[in-house]
Amino acid sequence: MTDLRGLRDEAEAARSLLANIRDIVQDDEQAAADAIEGETNLLEAIGAAVDAILEADAEAEALAGMVKRLAQRRERAEARADRIRAAIADAMAQTDLRKLKLPQATLTIKATPPKAIITDELDIPTKYLIEQPPKLDKRAVLEALKAGEQVPGAQLSNGGASLQIRI
Image (cartoon, rainbow, N blue to C red; front, side, top):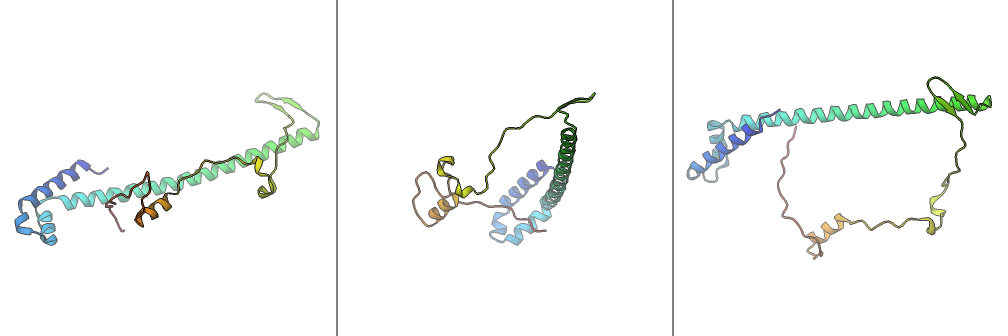
């Protein structure tokens, strides 16, 4: 785990350094970067933080793969249990057994109620449809705001900055 406190401390030291030498470096980004590199450990702290990001991303990716494999394994186990259930039900039906008491379970064949099978949803009359509440189209609101339109209940943010890390 990266030391975020150390990163904050180094950033504060670099900010302090730049405040003290502002008159010297003025708007020269390279001079400011050189001063930060020479007088603080900020670049090393940032490098360690990037390493921690890469490690966390790799762990998250590995866990996502594990979750996917475990979900597939669960589905196979559920399908196997369903096949076994069907085989037991078939065996009991062939022998006219409606109820069977075993040490580990009692098995009973029960009639199931009929259920609706939808063959073509578009043919179903509208009286069987459930009205859905309207859903906000955030993309349309954003486009309208960007176009300069006034949208009551919405406003355009000032944006922000994000850190991009290319590997």
